[in-house]
Length: 404
Image (cartoon, rainbow, N blue to C red; front, side, top):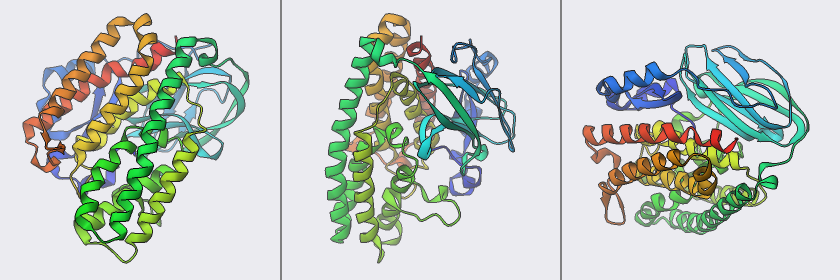
């Protein structure tokens, strides 16, 4: 799910409340105490953030988006089909997000955690004509400030004209299929344990089941109606929204005890996961989806796992952290031949930073899993935040290289 809402601060221990700061020219969350400890390196990163070069957008420069607390001003509301780049500047006082939606609120692309004063870019491949919607979400909540965006004409898909990109999307689609097949099986076992009242078995299965979801979360988030039903956190719920999915059962298992409707929630989780899997099998991903997804998974780490807010009841955040890293690696691996040919230095940097993150994760292993988040020291949290920061910056360049 998305980043930390401003009204969630009271739910997160003071030491771990997020402070948004630049990651290269990307928005990033870092625990406030860690931000104070980051020192000169963080200041150098801030000074260096100036937006970077423009990417082609339907044959011209980027479509600029001026986002504020009350408006979402898009410089153009029409474009020709092809690779579209949106350059989003947050001129408001709240952290914001930007989305491009297709019919049915299917997410074509998104950028999260754009702090006040920062600019982030989103490049998406739109090969067919149609009516879409742009949306800014100040405070990262609700349906957002929306506007109609029209795409004209048609364009050859990158994967249709480039054999290596076609192979990348096929490879990643196979990875997603493998993960969802196991997700289906393990979710049913987890639900059965809940329904039988076997709390200890359900607890043991909880984190191990969620890893298959966390690895493919950018794909799950393409379907805006199902992802919240499966993965919404209690503090993210809007007025009147029902609390369902993994995190509702997490609360039942670790905090309140099983409730009269826990079995019904478990059955709905199975149904929603099966629906998601069915939709994912017909989803045509682009190479840019892979590039954007690799970065989105690190955003998930920065906004939820580093702060300990994702698994607020079970504290199994490090299982999710590892799964997000696994999923990001899989996307990069699928794109590796293209990235290696176009920017070998970038690939080398990404590989090195992945290794650094993995080394820190390996140091927190306990048995078949990991330590609970509450067992981490302040120094360990700081190390994780710095390592994720260092990895996220080169990952933010992957989509741009793919779009060349």
